[in-house]
Image 1 (cartoon, rainbow, N blue to C red):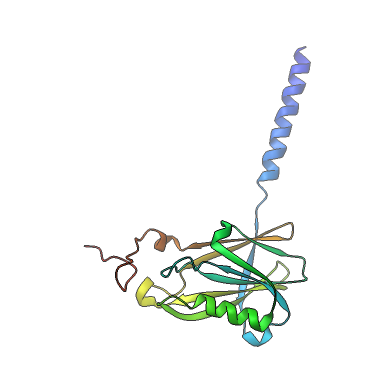
Image 2: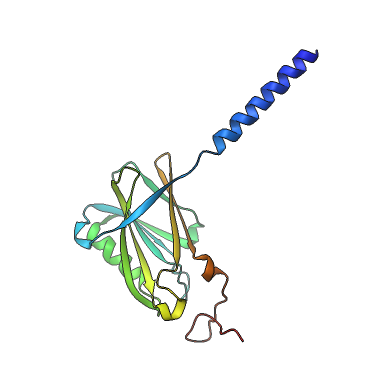
Length: 179
C-alpha cells in the first residue's frame, strides 16, 4: 500500500513538473524594421487599433499580409479595434496613415515592416509620432508582436511613463502642470 501511494505521488509530481516546464516556454517576439512605402504590394487585412475618442493617443494601424502562414490577433477587447479584410496595399496604407493622424499633436507617421524570425516580412505597422513638446518624446507606444503556432498576438499600450500621468481634457495640453 505504501509503494502504491509513493508511485501515485511520484506520478503526480512528474505530471506537475511536466506542466510547469511546458508552460514556461519563452515567447517568440517579432521585430520591426524601417521600410519605404514603394516596397508594399499585395492584399492586406487592415487592423485599426484606437481612435476611441478625440484625445486618444493610443492608435496604431497594422497591415497583415494575406496569403501567408501568419494570422494577427489583437490582445484587446473587440471594441478597441476594427478589422478590414482584402484591402489592396496602396488603399490600406492610405487608410492607415489617415487613421493615425487625427490627433491634434500628430507630427508624422512611421512605417515599419514586421518580420518573422527568418527575416521574412509578414506585415506592416503604421504608428503616429507626436509632437515632443506635448508628450516628452514622439513615440508614445509599446507594441509587442508575440508569435505562437502561426498566430501573432499584438499587445499595444502606452509607454509606462505616460500611463502614470493624468490627462487634462479641458486644455490644449494633455498633462496637468504639477504644482
